[in-house]
Length: 479
Image 1 (cartoon, helix red, strand yellow):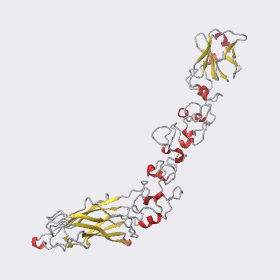
Image 2 (tube, rainbow, N blue to C red):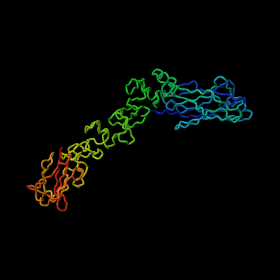
Image 3 (cartoon, rainbow, N blue to C red):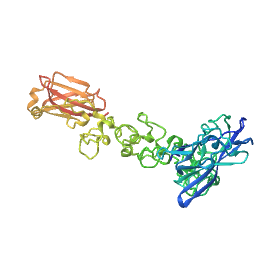
Image 4 (cartoon, rainbow, N blue to C red):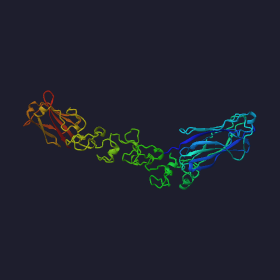
């Protein structure tokens, strides 16, 4: 939203009564003139008595504002005081009765002032009655002739008669001026859209924000009057949700979350994450204080929403961009990220068997049964056996997978004589069975009772007399 820069210009001049009776004064900007050939816009400042009491021009102070997007760089010419008219009292005292009007202006800040100060009471100065009297002319350089000048009086600071012994005057009616230099068409509310256009499109010429959404009418209106961003047949100037994304324009404002040069109130994907704003409402999935429609990582799993998209990898009816475990393997996406342990071209966070050992990550878990510093779900061998002993003892399990109540464990190799203890662990590292006396049936075969084993992955470890693992095999139970 453009900001209407209104610019405080300060005009000091002075008016006084020739009588002690207090009266009211009216002010207006009159005779607006646009000189296109020199890009200049001028108005006359006029004053009159509100109650028909006549007073003579003396001390006065005028302040007003104007739209710097339309006009700027004011100059002033007094029509009441100049070097040839010093009022009748001057010859008596042989001194000027006023400081000549002076204009001070800052082109950076836009502040300007015109001051005229009476030194003596204003005897013989021009009279002001019920008819308008020209006090001076203000001219401006034209910045944009299609925008309203929006000249307004500052009632708080405008004052009359403070430098002589006559009473100060009260304010009557202070009338501003809202016209475009190029057409002199009124813009009553100063929103940059003239009254004729507002009448034609049924917006409110007396309200600078007809739909109350925080965006000025002039900023919501396109040349030709066709601004209907969401195509709902309601012009943006009257539409409380300009882009139809389910978030009110007043709530989105003129910020640009994704930096695409389209403000959020006109952007159907405020955070440019590939998910429409209307589909991200009205939640904050990851609880980070940023609503999803402005959060580029809705579920806070370390993967951008635009990269995860609306795919549902694990089929749990929660799209990946809202799922903190995209592949449903019980290992959070943020802990898997872009690694591809088994080099199968599928990153771990989308792979339900991260180490490619044929056993789902969810079944293997994050424990480290063999104590090699590698979690089970990333350890294809799941072994902590020293290489020389591993070559001496092999363990064969039958049947494997196993759905029954008994398992045959055959030990083979030179390490068989060193085997002293057999232990069975589940994927969480819990000991589920232990044999401290190895009773072989034949051919170095042991029988295990598996009737209490639930479905899942188990590890059968064989230890020597020093409690060192000298053999290991994986068992799959199916119930």
